Length: 243
Image (tube, rainbow, N blue to C red; front, top):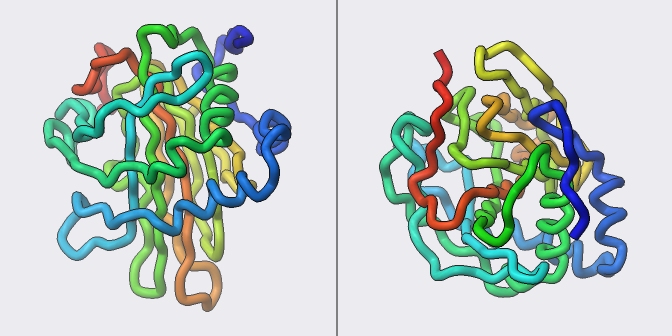
């Protein structure tokens, strides 16, 4: 595996063309099947009362000889100081479907992201958490990609990969340094366009998404890939939070 990017910035913005170029050994049908798997996500039951705008699946993996090896399914946890909405809670998300978890395209995508981390990561002692998330905007309600606002996730690195964006406005990705000064903002528009952050050095947020024009519904599909030390289920680190 090639050496990771060595960068002074705590983030990297990777264009869709660069990600897709790394997936050229896989046919378009396999890539299409991966993107279509977002249609099978389950409702996120940990939102507020009456909120139905998020669908989700999650699984944790090890990367062994370039292949994703799924570990036994368990709850997703974050420390209370990291996530003020759900921190300390054991959230039981539906696991990623077997066909998706075993997809060579998914493994190639994770390897591609690993090669582009803005810093070093020890695969031999690390784990990978993969979230499939769909945010739905309707005429009656906007969708909130980050209901907790500007935040951190408690991992070492997080890759934010756009998979689909249809009939929506908004969803601007924003990064801030540890003093809450703005660092970077972009609107992800092309499938596989990606932002990768060093979660220990930045905060991030995403603006709400609304339906575009007079359309009844719109969706924003994201894959989030967390890189963290193996066994670190209560994600936290020693940087101060937003203030």
